[in-house]
Image: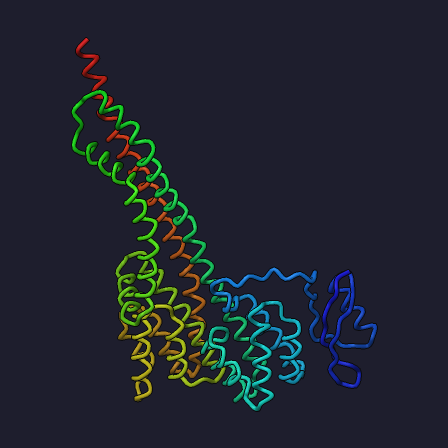
Length: 410
């Protein structure tokens, strides 16, 4: 029978936490009510067999979006129920299953016990709690609406994770086709073409230039030095590219290049606007200042070119300009965004209006992802077919020619 950890209020108004065994969550809730306890949070405890097989992998110091959403929602529930923040964090730390949260939460608790605010304690762990997260928590603390802000945070994180998931899912099929194309080319060029090339040489027929070029490439690909250069060179180039892309100049140049590719540009711009709108609306709704909201959101856009434009907007707004007019000057934000922002500024409901923009562009991203898939898939199939066709023509063309000459000679 599984165990369920719980947090509940007693009849006297105190908070109690513990563990109860039950068939399911509903049975656990019923058991708590029989004890005259009012459940605040009931969660199935993770089963442990006493063996640890944990392996430290690259990137394992980062929290998964799902784990952060669960933590944020549970913290919001407890704060809303009147459980003190320190006690809430202590309970969540004891129940944490994600290795990163198990490591980070005790440090956050220690900082708060030392007199730090929750936002200050969270800011010491930027790999887990982003600047957006910290700024919203800080605004919630200042406005006395921490539970509401945490709810906003969880919702925004879910939307952001869903957006990333759609884009990654759209790239799975093209990636698979690309890998299959490269493997097929390698197998044909190193195993099939050399054998057929040997047959053609035995026939003594004159080979066309494209067949000779193909055989030359095939012979090169079979050389040890070529295989070694691929095995060593490709990883080195990937590492160098990733390092270059992490530099400010390299990141900007790469993102600028992506914005020049027609279909890719459409997806990047719509994704950036959707993320900007969703995060900016959450920050503004939490009471963060407009300039700080813009600067914080700019860092989460995911494109250095659009980020630079937003930072320029922030400077102009801090100097007395209007956000709608500054956004209108951006070459990447469509006019409708500036127009809707202008309406929000006039009515004093900027966060509400921009949330509508987020919802609209999240739907646009779905359409753009579908368009990207519909373009990439046939292109990859044509490339694969073209490569195989070129090899077939180069190899079987001379054979057909020899057979034709033999037939006409007889």
